[in-house]
Image 1 (cartoon, one colour):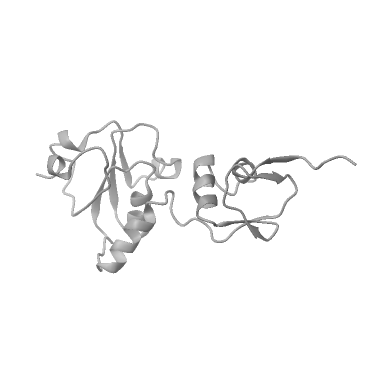
Image 2 (spheres, one colour; image 1 turned 180 degrees about the vertical axis):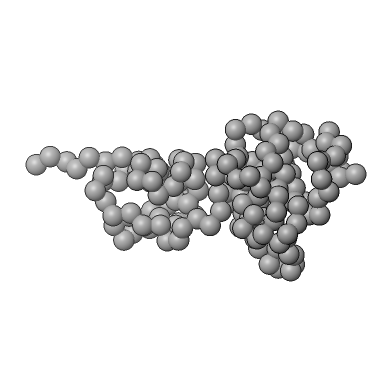
Length: 163
């Protein structure tokens, strides 16, 4: 009898089109959001049969898990971004940007010192102004007034960013 072919769970999720990248696959696997043949699997490297039944507990609402943080804050503090021009400082993959757009922001300046990290879906959205390789410390002004700013940065003090 021949053994069934197996592959890593994170790779299989991408190959089946359930998630766009292995990084996203790893995130939802570690969060316990993936069921394989009815059993929760929480290790991305788990070898899974190519014909296994795979289900996500819930579809991902945002392009990045960081979106959950901002969505929770907007709700908790009753902040309405509908119709606003916003800035997302430290945008990375764009979880915050995605939340802002889904909550009605008319434009989001997605700023990050990195390059090539912002999700493709957001890059294609005409409401997003992509500002890669941009250190917020050195931004004097944007093309228009911004009425809401969210900041998620790790390698710089907010004292150096805020005026």
